[in-house]
Amino acid sequence: MTSMPLAGDLNETHVRLAVTDEEVAAAQRLRFTIFYEECKAKPSDEVLREKRDFDLYDTVAEHLIVVDPSRGDSPYAQIIGTYRMITQAAAREFGQFYSNDEFDISPLIDTNAYLLELGRSCVMEDYRTRPVLQLLWQGIAHFVFSNNVGLTFGCASLHGTDIENLKEELSYLHHFHLAVPELRAKALPGRYTNMNLMPASEIDEKEAFHKLPPLIKGYLRIGAKIGDGAVIDYQFNTTDVCIVLPTSYVRQRYLRHYERTTQKTVSSKILNLIPPLQETVQTA
Image (tube, rainbow, N blue to C red):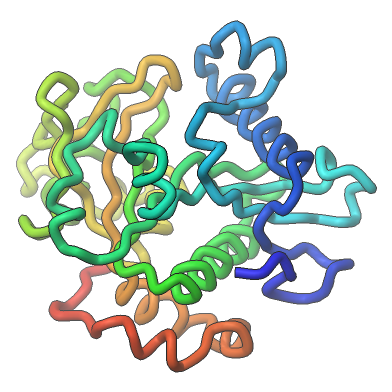
């Protein structure tokens, strides 16, 4: 994926990869603002001192950014959204994916598809709109097809660590969006939290979906499925689930929707490398 914008021009809000250390640092500073200041995660002394959310995975990751040039001349002002992407090659170099600390992802590795882990997604409060989320997904789709990724996955978070308060959302995900066994990552034994907390018959599907975070709703709308079990992350004040999304789902549920804006950057040759869906995708 090149560093050029995927939509509009450089004077308009656009999505691309970070290409300088300053841009990566700006994305990390945005993550700090959202995760630690807004959502009350607990920073280490070093993270607090630098006011950046960072770890060693950032050194091998690609950083997708949404840039609004009208906000000023500095990346620290212009970057209003970000996603961290770790390819299978980068994870092999590093030794593991980030998700390995929370989930057993061996079923995903066993598919022999080329994997891409998505994580650390956040958007500045004033920009949490559908167009910005669409820009992020456009960038992910371009990266996926340009690099022949077969399967995307990653940790997605519900805010809070009180399982009783999240039982309807977790039960809804378990009953209505559980991945097939061949793609079912599972929370590690020492961290496993049961998501089957309510009978399916007692769940108001529409209300449960409405209560989910926008990011998870976006995943579900394009066909994502959920692994077995959740993980409580007390540092980040979240309850995490594992999202699993074959790229053929992205093709059918996302690019079909936005093909007019992506047809110039995603070649039909790349699209043809992605196998068709083998099952009907349920959307909420």
